[in-house]
Length: 507
Image (cartoon, rainbow, N blue to C red; front, side, top):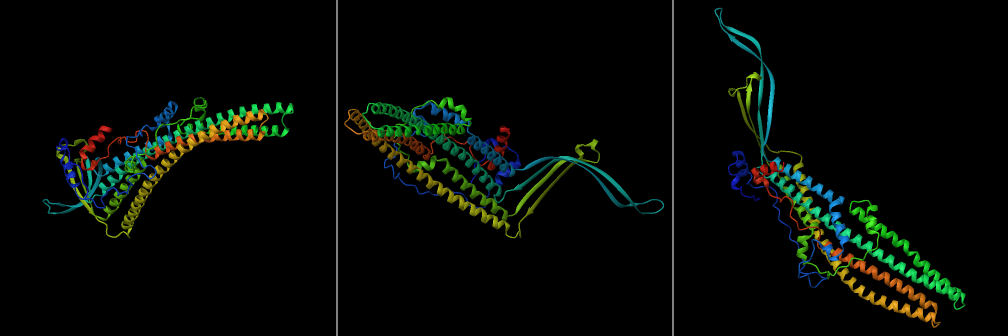
């Protein structure tokens, strides 16, 4: 049984056909009634024993990085990204299909005009003084008809109502699809921006180390000229310097590629962003601890889960559409207009009307209807499995992001200690080498260790920020993700007068 809303009082004085339609449409609809699937949900995250007690800033999570450039890039992406525009176009299509599906279940009214010439051949009785008899003759009649046709297929078994349910669910799924695109887009913009800044920092670290190594190389050459060191130490210094210099083109390439990727996400030519993003900027960091909402909140927030659930509702309704084909179809038709044999003399006397009804029921169709029902049932089963897989994927992504973010924090703390120790080791080894108390290999090892430690630290800081972005994305955070549908879905078919008025208002 399907339930529908009560007709509001302001529509009680609508025409009799509309009132009859509302009464007829309160009947049962064939096919299974939809109920959201039960989803086993853990009480807490395995990788986060304490969930967030305060509301997380998920609708504008990128602002936790306190980076005005990132904020501006996010706004541009939402306005200009082509995937978002494509998703919005799909919503328009789904809304139009929904309107068309509702309209298909309402009575149709058309204007009709006919011009017909008819020939009658009959024996006409005659009488007179000469006697009686029959005479044959042809009679040609012109008939002019003008008026209105009305037709309506009664939805006794709910096929149209199930079609409306399917179209309604499809509209909502496309809206959730747009939100899912936004969640992915914002995550990709932030990730590429973090990657850009991380590579710029790596480039700066490489250039700083190169300058230091070039100074050491120059000192080594002077010491060689003074006979204080060997040619081997000069060659070792030259090799380390060249090795460091070779890293610069790698980081310059990744910097430019990150800018190009951001240009694509923002729907802009890559060259347009180069003046804004090529200057070195700080690596975005957030003070957020990386906690998460409870698992049940993820089911509510994530648009991909909500989209999968709406697709399941659509597949369930389509079973009812297919099942309704097994039942009889009853159609009503009517005509009301004027009719005359002379087009110039249409008068109220020449009124014409007709009423008709038809009933058709399937008897034998080689199993086509039953096969279609089985196909829809299989599709519903696939949608259910897709929903379950989407939920499990969401839980996995949250757990992965939680553990990665937590471990990145620990790694950064250890790397900071390592860099401080390597910087001290380099200072001491260089001083001892200059005083002739140590071999140049100690300096070489210290320089390489410091360079590698600084690169590892920047890389870990970039990954920590990227993992926080991944956590926000896994939690369903995005640009106004919780916003309602632009037009709340409702069963207009139980309130046909309201649908007609709303549709005319939109026009």
